[in-house]
Length: 132
Image (cartoon, rainbow, N blue to C red; front, side):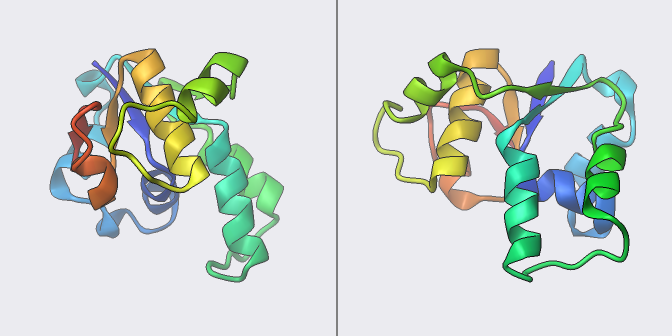
């Protein structure tokens, strides 16, 4: 099965894995449990915005942190394609997330992936599968 990481899951796995649910930690710690992990290209941007807004802090070079955080087994960074960009704006309703959430949801739908997320808005959206 394919899983796409919501941005907070990607960050927490690389900074504070104890914040993840037991299911998410178990899955991410055992690459045999999944076919592929996906990460939307919007997630490194979201991480960078959190740094810019001083909502999180790190003690190393941000570019090095991102490079290391992308070095996960079976992880594929999914680009923001024109198709995903459009589909993020035309998701079946009701879905009113922030633009990054819309892109992550559209990417999950395009890639037929389950979203690893704690976000209740995404968990309540019936048009995607989720795991927490």
